Length: 435
Ligand SMILES: Cc1cc2nc3c(=O)[nH]c(=O)nc-3n(C[C@H](O)[C@H](O)[C@H](O)COP(=O)(O)O)c2cc1C
Image (cartoon, rainbow, N blue to C red; front, top):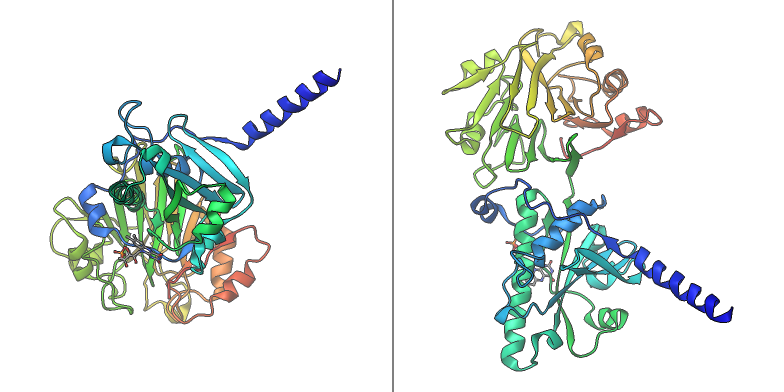
């Protein structure tokens, strides 16, 4: 009896330990991402994160990129001296510290609790990143602790870290390679001996001001706030820009080092929306510029002209294509009609593999908004006196009922009023730097 109680307890403990491990979904090695050259051109360190948790798929992908199982059981994604694979990877998540096991594609729980502050070492932005990856040199795996081996192991850790840097950049995630951390406390926490040396870490997450949405078939659509009425979207290796502007709106934006555009949408002809210089900085021969008729008159080259009500399907964007509809954007207040007369300017509704994004352009709360259905994400303007007051914007939002609302192009308007007016509406209002 006593023996069976003990063995039942042992089984329970074993199953609990097992239950705390995480079986990761297979890494998505067919994911579309930026080219290596564009990734190298745009890679940079990020020290401001939003704390949205990553999905297990995203965690699996980034761990695999760091040092995951590759072409056979003998190789991993990072080269290591003599293929010793002595860099162990630990994932610091809010609920615990895990070790990544490439062979089984699992995260093995080592310790409960949030220990990211041991990695931060005073750089508090690390606490905002939902994941931090720690690289640990294991000299037992290296088979030697000589000066030469120590040097090679440091180089190997750099390779793993650079894999993380490049992977993150290519899919719209952010990171920074770091040497700072409380190595002694980490070693104590994880029970290391002098044969295991914490060497580098990379916080991983989306940068502050970046929002990730998912299409019906699971592709990420990453929205980046640029400023004012300018934004960009990354969908795998494809880039969409809306109303990019260089120096007509402060701060000046240089697009030359940004990923080239597959599509540029122009809502209307005003200089804070239509800027030939920005379009030229972002364009390649295959970039498609989509604009309202009046803007197209000011642009050289092949422009795809869309007037209110026009609709097109663009197949190249995502697996199930992207539908674009040009919708009206105009002033309906008697004293504002000179700003944006009816019928001239466009808003756009993009349906990207089921994800519906409404970019309103410069408009007031017009009756046509009632026809917009199933909008997931809406961008509504609030720049006075040219577009909507906070009250009009809140009314428009309650009509459209988006899941997520970005007030944008809001200039000096007190945008917190919109947040207050929409309290309790069920709409997730997100304020980004769209002054
Ligand atoms: C080995 C190494 C250690 C680093 N340590 C830190 C660190 O502790 N904290 C930090 O904020 N950045 C750290 N960095 C990031 C560098 O400061 C950054 O890469 C450098 O300033 C160049 O900027 P870029 O990555 O945007 O090109 C480290 C980079 C490397 C390669």
